[in-house]
Image 1 (cartoon, rainbow, N blue to C red):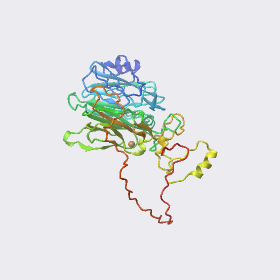
Image 2 (image 1 turned 60 degrees about the horizontal axis):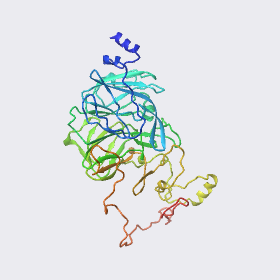
Image 3 (image 1 turned 90 degrees about the vertical axis):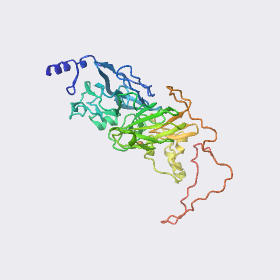
Image 4 (image 1 turned 180 degrees about the horizontal axis):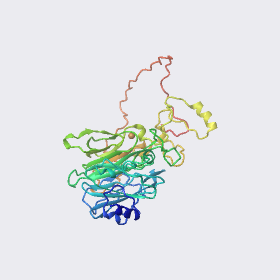
Length: 461
Ligand SMILES: [Cu+2]
C-alpha cells in the first residue's frame, strides 16, 4: 500500500484518503472551462447512467469521462472574471472559468472521482456539502485531509449514495474563499430516470458580495453588510428568465451559501416544497407556499405546474436584496426640501444630485452618473416602464407558444386586451383621505409633503 501511494505521489498527484482506484494513474480528465455568462443548454448524458439534466441559470454542467466504471470530473479552483450584469465585472475566485463553479450531475449509485487542481494563490479544499461519503473525502482542511497547496492536484472519490441537491465549497480559509465566490451545485439524480420527472428543472445558488462602487474585488471581511445579492453570481437585469411552456411541471432548486436567509417568492402560482438538504419529501408531506425561506447553508427544491401565462416575478422578498450597490447607505429624504442645500453643495461639487425627496422611484428614471464598473441600484425596463429592481430578481415566463425543447427568451408577455391594470378615468368622485393631525411634540401641522419634482431631471408629469 505504501509503495503504491509513493508511486502516485511520484506521478504528480497528492492523494486524499485511501479509497483511490487504479484509474487515477491515467492522465487527468480534461478541465473544461466556461467564459459565457448565458445559461447553457442542459447537458444530456452521452455516457454513464441516464438522467434528465437540470438547467443551471446563467451557468453550465461540467463534462465528464467514464473510466473503469467511474465518472471522472476535473475541477480547477482559480481566479475568474465574472460579469455580474452587462456593465459590471467582478474579480472573483471560482472553478473552471466561472463563479459559481460548474454544476456536477451524477446518478444515485454512481462511483464519482473528482480531480481538484488548485490555481489559487493560497491553499484550498472542496467540501461536498450534504453528501454521505467516507470521512476522508469530506474535504475539511486539517480535520479530514491536508490542505491542497497552490499548484497541487488532489483526487476525491466516493459513491453518490443519495439522490438530491447538494453544494460544494471550500472548507479552507472559508470566510475569504466563499466571499470571493467559490461555490457550486451538485445534483444526484434518482436511479430511475422515469421517477420524479419534470419538464423544466432549474438550479441556482444564492450568493452575496460586497464590492464598493467603482471597484472590482469583493471585500472579504464583510460579515453582514453585503451590497450585491446574486442568483448564480448574477444580478438583475443580468439574470436569465426561467422560460417554461404553459402546463409544464417545473422544479426550481435553490441553495444558499450567503451569510443570511433569503425568502424566495414566486408570483402568480403556489408551489410545493418538495425537497430539502435532507432529501426528497414524501408527496403526502409536501406543503404549499408562495415564498420559501432558504436559510444559510440550506437547499430547497420547489415544484409547481406552470398553469398561468404571463411574466411572473421570481425574487428574494428582502427588498434590499433586489437592489444593487449604493442603495444601502442613503439617508431617507422623503419630505425633505433640499432646494437651498442643493444649491450650496452644487457650488462645491458640480455633479451633486438630490436623491429620494419623493421616494426613490425617480432614481431608476434618472440618467444618474455612476462610477465605472458600477450598476445602477434600481434598474431594468419592461414593456410598461422602469422595473426599479436589481439583485436577486428575475422573471418566470409562462407561454402557450413555447415549442417543446425550444426555451429561448420569448420577449415580454402580451397581455390580452382588458386584462392590465389601468388608470380609472370615468366618474371620479373625490376619494376620502386621512385628516392631517398635529405633531404631538411641536403642535406643527406641517407633516404633509409637497409633491415637487427635483429640478433639472426631466420629469414627465
Ligand atoms: Cu435575500
